[in-house]
Picture 1 (cartoon, helix red, strand yellow):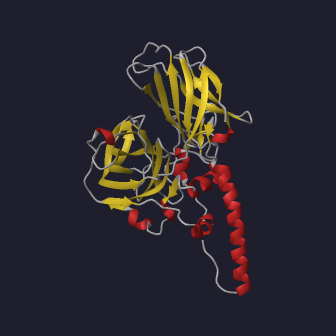
Picture 2 (picture 1 turned 30 degrees about the vertical axis):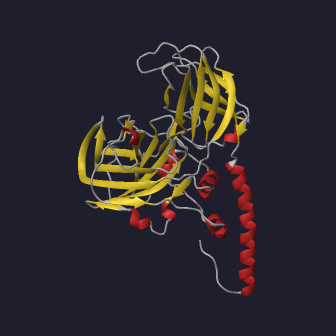
Picture 3 (picture 1 turned 180 degrees about the vertical axis):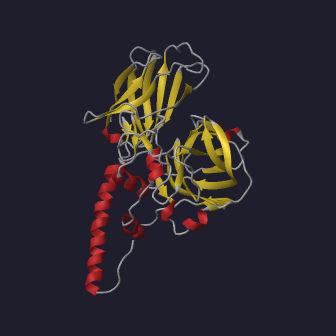
Amino acid sequence: MSNKKNIFSKEIELSEIVLNKTNQAFEMIKQEDTGYMKKTNMRGKKLFKTQTAAIAGICILGVSSISVVAAIHHYWGRGMNGNIQASDTQQQVLTENGIAKVYRENPDYASMAVTDNGITITPDTVVVDDRCAYLSFCISNYSVDDGVEPGFEMVGVYQGDNPEDVNSWVNMSGRMYDGIIPDENGTPVYEDGSSLEEYEDGSIISRYTDDNGNMEYIIQASVADENDSLLGKTIHVNFKNLGTLSKAEFTPVVEGVWNFEISLSDVSSTQEIEVGKKVEGTSFKIENIDISPISIKVNYSVTEAPEEKEDDFGIPAVRGVVLKDGTKIPYLIDGSMTGYTDSTKTHAYQIAGFDRVIEVDEIAALIVLTSYENEKVDIPISQ
């Protein structure tokens, strides 16, 4: 049994209604002959005291505003599409439903920028669900030579108002977007789908700057507590000192601090789907999943907890999905958080974000990694 939230089909129907109303409005204008319309995994708990840009969420409110919103083409930007890939339709639907926010659409966008030592950083796009938040930031007036990796000395991410409070911690990874994304089989390619080029020394050519000479920093953050939620929370993102990275060593180039306070959307896109299927070859059973277009939480029951190996609990992990049309996406998930819910080890969980937007209603099965030997099985799910 599933608690369905068919985001994509609902929005398509809404768009058709909006289109009809918009056409009627244009016809009225035409008849009146007047006017026109326009259109690194780490725990973030560092605080740098400096100028802070307070970023309010862009709210889509009121029936009267729907036709105007629908007339906007929401483009997530280069960095966000490198963080979590989405089709044009998916970008429109998730943005119009308040799950994604494109800050460039805000009339007060310029006031959100923070400039220090001539370098300007501005929030670009945020996509969020109950468990995960994807964020991208535009960096202007900074460049590096070809073959050099740009980076920050420190990036801190935390929720709430007290970075020292253990409840403020989040799990996060971040990097300068280099123009390289994984395809459906997990193979690295350039964002246009072309194969990677190499320098004479064999290193990969990275494409850090866009056509305007700007860079983007991309972040994936997730809850540190499996019972926590990011919805409606305030999240702080703090950058300190720009420079270059080589073999994990930072070389400073520009000193500065750029701090942001972001209000996350409170719109949930999660569906709960009952599964009730044993993971063959293990002592685990997938009871149900909480899944959205951008992340998943898997809830297991356990008959006998396996032996732990270093930091590996031996808990099965969803790695990809099989769609109803037979398409397999085996590398939808790179890393994830797993653990037991209590000391009895009779229940376990996995929380993971996706590297691309998924239409939940199109999923037929989960691809599950079952053991240390990298064995995988397909687990059908009922919807």
